[in-house]
Image: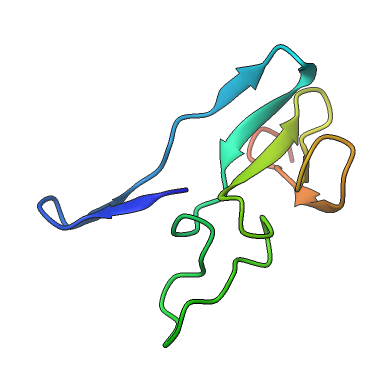
Length: 82
C-alpha cells in the first residue's frame, strides 16, 4: 500500500512485517497505490494483490502469493545466486 509523498516527490512503501499466525511468511508491500494500479485514467484494482495493497513472501522459498498458501504470483529472486 505504497503512497506518494508530494513534498518529497517519491513513492513511500510500507515496511515488511512478520505475522505470528503465519510464521513461515512475511507480509510485504505490493508497490501499488493502496490497492489501486498506478497511472491509470480511472481507479483500477491492482491485479497483483487483488486490491489489498500487500502480498506475502514465503521465507524459505521466496515464493510470492496474494495470501499465505493462496494464488501464487511469482518468486523473489533478488537473493538467488546465479
